Image (tube, rainbow, N blue to C red):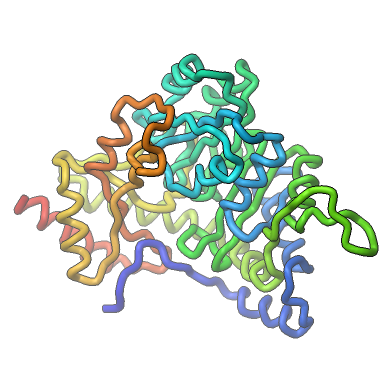
Length: 368
């Protein structure tokens, strides 16, 4: 059996044909017809007014901060239970991070967010909230708190494209949202991201900054510095094809989750919950075991069968780069990290593979 990866790409029927069209046109540089189509397809799917295709989700988060006017020395709140890329742009802009722990949803805790705002040595100007593993954070409560305190909201929906809360697309609640099309995401173009907002002027400014902040002159004119963050037309073509299968990919991810849940129902485990009125994309099937370090034994055992699995994200407040950072932590994310695992969730995975993974998990727990 070939190696089973955690979340490999899964191409549809049309991506290759669209890439051929790009090569026939010889327009393979950044920008182009398929980049425009990719942006429009995201707008149509999510209901957002404006979208900007970029080279990565991290680039999107960076431009979100820049376009909201976040600057050197500003205090920015962020989920501690996330991937480093979520918060890297805080360092790019020389801002001060304030990390906030999770609650029973595994996502950012609104109650701890309130405490963090009160604890802050100065007024926070923005929040980067992650929809972890494709599951919705408590956006109603979070938005209310941020509105009351005049805090801008950036949604890190890198893992959450296709997920909804109250039938509204994740990534479209805050001032800005960002999606990722990295190779392991629910759909991919090999690498890329998308910044979305209902503030069309904000997206216009982000677009300007993403192309080296070039002024509209015949010659090259620059009044400020910008970035080389645009997406190529080749990757845009792949993205257009992937958008055509997004709903099927979400359905398959959720089927995979339910199969794991059914097969492992007799074990003393807890899967990542889904908050009321939400529908996550179940990008990865994630769960926690009763005993600490059980997950490490399972990861080791699966690897011996050439099956990839991973621990849950190591919280940012435990990372060396955040040593001494401001934080409001109650231990929730640390506990999840010490007991949790991500199981293979590829949309081209067979039922037999899922069954085999479950048997390995059961055997380790039985003998633990």
